[in-house]
Image (cartoon, rainbow, N blue to C red; front, side, top):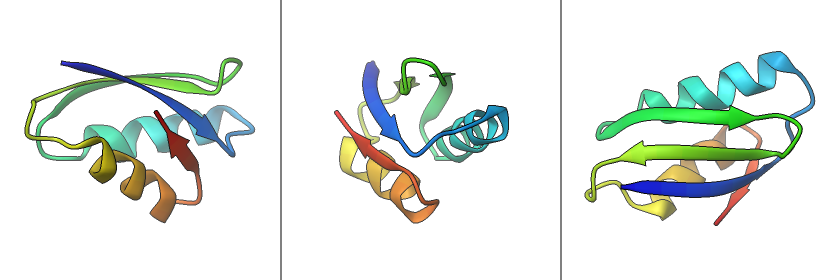
Length: 67
């Protein structure tokens, strides 16, 4: 399944890489596509991965993520 997240707090390419890596390191996440200009992330993941878990992981890294 795919979840579209709004990600606040990204300011550069390193932020994009950090958000992408954070999401893709989660168990059950197949891939993440992050767009700096739109401040979004599209995450392909198993149904067992909750939106709350994804937003919490990004919050821990200093980004504010919402659906």
